[in-house]
Amino acid sequence: MATRNLQWVLASRPEGAVKESDFRLVESELRPLEQGEFRIEVLFLGVAAVMRNYMLNAEKFERPLAIGDVMHGRGVGRIVESRNAEWRVGEIVHGKMGWQQYAIADGSAYFLMFKVRQRVAPVSTALGVLGLTGFTSYLGLVDVGAVRAGDRVLVSGAAGGVGSNVGQIARNLGADPVGIAGGAEKCALLVSRLGYRVAIDYRAGDVSPGIAAAFPDGIDVFFDNVGGEILDAGLAQLRRHARIVLCGAISQYVNGVERPRPLHNAYAIFKKMARMEAFFIYELSAHFERAEAQLAAWIAEGRLIYQEDILDGIQRMPEALLRLFAGRNVGKQLVRVAG
Image (cartoon, rainbow, N blue to C red; front, side, top):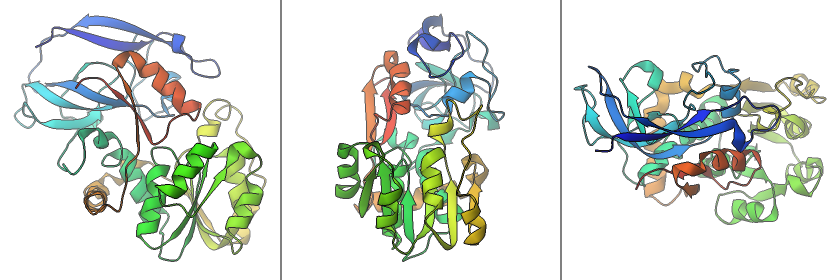
């Protein structure tokens, strides 16, 4: 087994946009395991927009990061050594692993470690459609958004890791999804592969006319991954008793944390007797098994096509995160760390 470990550590806290120079690649010795621990060879790592907040210690649910600490992040990997009878060598697991080739966990609640049980798709999907990303898509739409057959559904960030699933889930449940994405290529993908009836290109200008044209009778469910101007535009087109699901706010993660954009159409929530609710996926963990089973069944039936954007090599972790903020990813942004 290897004796050395490549790790990306925090080199500086971002000022404005995240930069590659905010990270440093280091090599360290693998330490011996203590009783109760197990070692994981990381196969894939995922990135998420919230990682900028990790770098600023702005998320209270995650341990603080000091300069020189290994970057936080979720991965999927294979247990290669274990001193814990509950976690056996050879098992494939996903959870908090950090930006490194080898991770150590102990099965405690902090690591949010789960064994991969569904094998209808490659193990990389444990970070996407058959992991927290997929659970966020399904439970956010079904449990938080209370989607019903016939609902008119708007999804922002529709070509991202979560959004690329939401349109298909809505379609499978008899709803009518419309997606917002950036660029003609992504918009074509939404309609041709990802279940959306219409795609609205936010890079082509103000999305308000496109939303109004796509929803002449208003929006029943708005699944928002973007926040800011796009959230505001969607609020202007709500139907009575609409549900707005606040899943993410990538447009606000750089400047909006300090200076949130006002929502000029917030009064529509009151006027339309609508409900706007944010959610934290870890608080819905009791429902993960139900979500996983339904998503896996749809994949097996050919009714859910998962979309992954994979870079090769742990050296490309900062590039992967920067691609996310630039909106260059199509589907879940991953990095393949080992074969």
